[in-house]
Amino acid sequence: MRKLLIAAAVLLVLLFVLSHRQHAAVETGPGVLAPDAPQQVDLDHGAQLQRDGVNLQTRAHFDITARVLSRKDYSGSRDGDLVPLDLALGWGRMSDSTVLAGIDISQSGRFYYWHVKDFPIPRREIETSSANMHMIPADEDVKRQLELVRPGQVVHIEGFLVDATRADGWHWNTSMTRDDTGGGACELIYVEGVTITQSL
Image 1 (cartoon, rainbow, N blue to C red):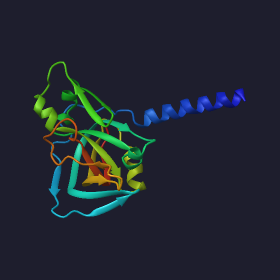
Image 2 (cartoon, one colour):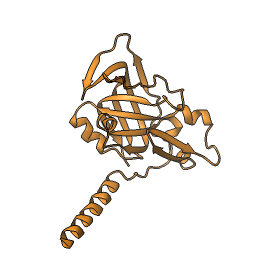
Image 3 (cartoon, one colour):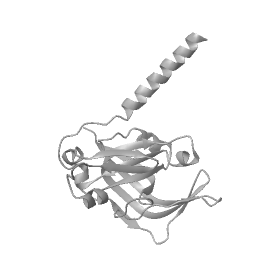
Image 4 (cartoon, rainbow, N blue to C red):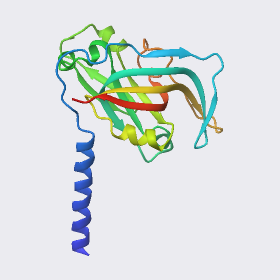
C-alpha cells in the first residue's frame, strides 16, 4: 500500500510538472508582435446557440490577433465546464516585450490584473490595448487547440461575442467594447477557430 501511495504521489508530481511546462511562457524579442486592434462586427439579430444546457446569444462576430499575456485554467464547476480557460490578451504596444517587461500581470477569479512601478506607456493605453477574455470552445478540436496556447505566443482567435443564460436565471454577459474596465469588462467568446501564429 505504501509503495502504491508513493507511486501515486510521484505520478501527480510528474503530471503537475508536465502541465506547468505545457503552459510555460515562451520568450520573445522586442517589438510589437500584434499591431492591430480586434475586429468586431455587431449583429442586429444574432443566432441562438446551445451548449451544455446554456443558451448563447451571439452579439457580434469577433476576430483578434494578439499576444497572450497570461492564461488561467478553470475546472470543477459549471462555469468551468462552459468556459475552461481565460486568456489575457494584448495588442499594439501591449504586445511588445520591452513594454511588458515593466508590467506585472496576473489572473484570478475571472479577472486580469496588472501592476506597474512606472508606466512604460500611458495607463489608458494599457487599459484599451489589453483585456481578459473568456473562452468557450465550439468543439473538442478547438478546445484541444486552446490547451496548447502559452503566454508569449501570438494567437489568432475567431468566433462570436456571446451572452450566456440558463433557465434558472443565471446569466453571463459579454463586454461589447475594448474601452471598459472592471467588472463586466471581459469578453465572452464562442471560439470557432484558434491558430498560434507566432511562438518564438
